[in-house]
Length: 111
Length: 115
Image (tube, rainbow over all chains, first blue to last red; front, top):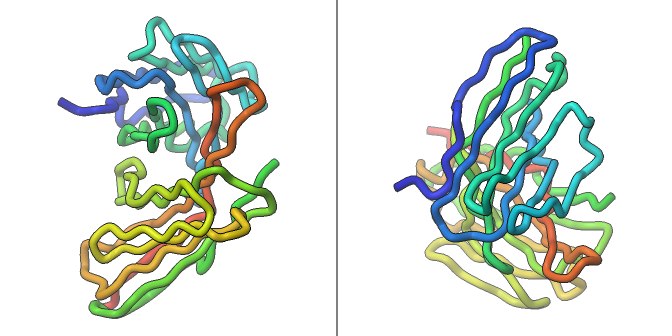
């Protein structure tokens, strides 16, 4: 009965590979987000989707491509992974002006 | 872009002490929120503030939305071991297209309780 669930929790991969992270929320929220948390714990927004429509794209390299098949899911695909992509990626969702609910994160390590 | 400066960056306190941290911004926010992050988990909402000047409590936590809408503080009274973690402020700003907004996070305050 997890509210916002992300898979996988950990992802270790080599440079140049392509990988995907999945996110699902069962809260009935209409907006979903991807945030990146770096090694200094700074949280920065990457994308937001409202009812499957891309709303925010915060100057993220186009190697990152979000996809929202329906308003309960927001996946993140990353092409040609680089060392600097190593971080913890958080999915979040909200309804209207309510607080964001975050998933437990996906720790991506690029070697 | 908007920046949220949070201080202090870290705190080392003894159990039972009160804690105070604050967040300042170069621009105005419509809403201030405070989150706590435990290791290996995502941030969890503690308190939300919706009006300038608003003072809100949640158990031992008290937070205020600054009158200028550019700052907020969080106080924790009588700290206990489970208060350990990273605390983030976050400001919500409305984008130009109606109904859409984003949260900008502060730099975080790491709270450690010394035995």
